[in-house]
Image 1 (cartoon, rainbow, N blue to C red):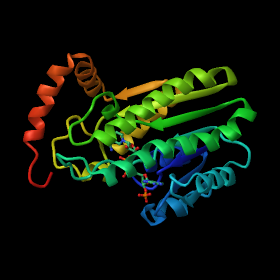
Image 2: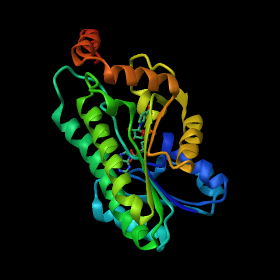
Image 3: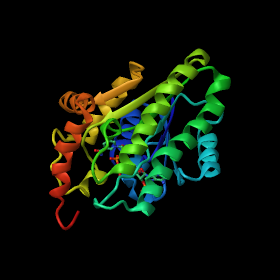
Amino acid sequence: MNIFITGGTTGIGLALAQLYLEEGHRVGICARNLEKFPSEIKNKYKLLKCYQVDVVNREELRTAIFDFAQGNLDIIFANAGRSVGAKSKTPLFSVANNIIDINVKGVLNAFEAALEIMVPQKRGHLVATASVAGFIGLPGAGAYSASKAAVLRLCESYSIDLKPVGINVSAIAPGFIDTPLTKQNNHKMPFIMSSQKAAKLIKKAVEKKKVLYLFPMRMKIIVTILEIIPRSWYRALMGFRVFNYSSKD
Ligand SMILES: NC(=O)c1ccc[n+]([C@@H]2O[C@H](COP(=O)([O-])OP(=O)(O)OC[C@H]3O[C@@H](n4cnc5c(N)ncnc54)[C@H](OP(=O)(O)O)[C@@H]3O)[C@@H](O)[C@H]2O)c1
């Protein structure tokens, strides 16, 4: 298979790339800084192609995906993303804008280019890495929650729209995964899992063509409860957390 992964140099994207490469698939990855990609993996796999691309740049990303696919693309993982970093009680709008650009427009740009190849093929699979944060408005992470909610809704709509043309769509909503992204967190991260384990679960969900995959199970239960309780209860519960931001937050 030909598989393209945005944000493939570290964390979940890197673990997915390794899994597919080990199985003998052709894999293309992109990121802004390719030096983060482990050189031993780069040297080991001839079927790997790396592109220095910012997913926010529509044309750059399209060029990379087209160069990799050569007219044949099986799966695209729109995985590149960023989180809030240090949390703040007042919104940091420059950060919020960048989060929306990368996490939402980056997914649109990846899907747009992939579909140009997949629609004529009449087959293909669009996969986006959303988050459990997309189901609730996380305090201190409004733009991140909003960006992931947008990705979830995009995928839901596209899964209906694209089914008749033979294209599957999956939204992946992980809980906490141990990656450079979560290393910045200075709060508790329940049920945190390795990126290798997460990648195996994501790969399986993609094989099963799940439209939505929320994991791990214990996080799924918690998020489902938080999503359905009265919003006043949710605000009261989460408001308590805001008062507990440390000075570093
Ligand atoms: N870790 C978690 O707990 C968790 C939970 C739920 C969802 N997610 C989502 O999972 C995805 C992957 O996150 P991760 O935890 O694996 O984070 P990560 O280790 O920080 O990886 C992010 C990847 O995206 C790339 N990237 C970031 N901005 C980019 C841009 N503008 N253009 C191109 N590439 C870009 C990064 O490389 P460069 O910085 O060099 O560009 C890197 O390769 C994200 O969408 C994240 O929101 C993560």
